[in-house]
Image 1 (cartoon, rainbow, N blue to C red):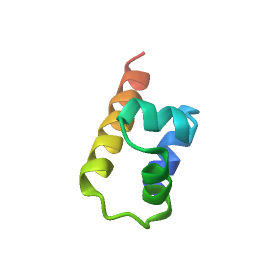
Image 2 (tube, rainbow, N blue to C red):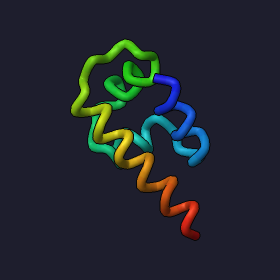
Image 3 (cartoon, helix red, strand yellow):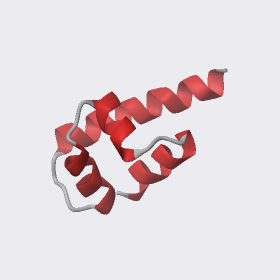
Image 4 (cartoon, one colour):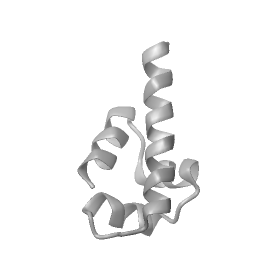
Length: 60
């Protein structure tokens, strides 16, 4: 979905980098960004990684 892609881009991460950090398959991440995946577990994991990284960035 757009929020995943937008947050990833704010951090300057590639899809591959986020996939590794969130322990999800790159294809799953691509489908999440396109809104074509219903894998809620992967989505929650990806958003948790993104939100933590953004929070760390704000604290710095």
